[in-house]
Image 1: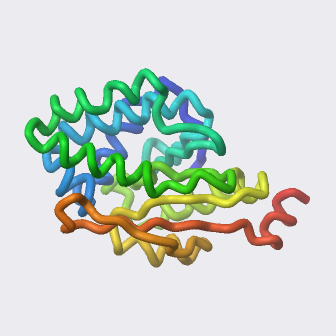
Image 2 (image 1 turned 90 degrees about the vertical axis):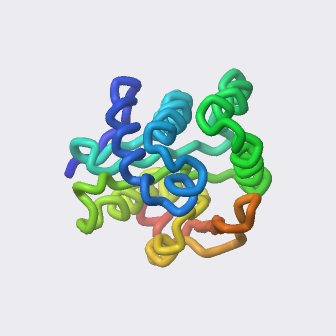
Length: 203
C-alpha cells in the first residue's frame, strides 16, 4: 500500500482509524475513554493540532496511520493546551482530574534531550490487522525520519503486547509509569539510530 503525508483533509479519516485501533487499548480505550465517541473527540483534538507538522502519515485508504512530532515540536499548540482540562471535564466528568493526572505523567516522563522524533500515535484499522501494515508503516517512518536525519526516536507503549514488536524495530525499554490508580502501565521506549542504517539512508 502507498504511504503519504496526511493533510487537514484527512482529519476525519485519521480520527476514525485511530479511534477504531485504540478501542481495545488497555489504557486509552478501556481505562481513560471507555466510550468510543469520547475517544474519537480526544483523538480528533490532538490530531488536528499535530497536522500543523508534516509528520502525520497514512497508509492506503486509512488502513494504518502514524502521528509524529518532530524534534523541538509539541503535541499541542499553546492555545490547545489551555483547552485540555475543559475538554476532559466535558468528556469524562468527575474522572477528569484522574485522566488529567495521566496526561501530566506522559509529559513529565517525556525526555527533553537529546533532540528526537516522537511517535505520538500509531494504529491499524481493525479491518486490516494481521497484515503487518502498522509495523511496516513504522519501519518506513523510521527510515524517512529518524534514520534520515541521524536522530533517535521515542514512544510510549500503552499495550504490553506491542512491546516486542517495537523492540524488533530497534526500540528498547527505558522506563515506565502507571495510571493514577496503578491499574495500567505505560512503557517508555527509545531507539537510537544505528550507524549502519544512518549511513545507508544518508548515502
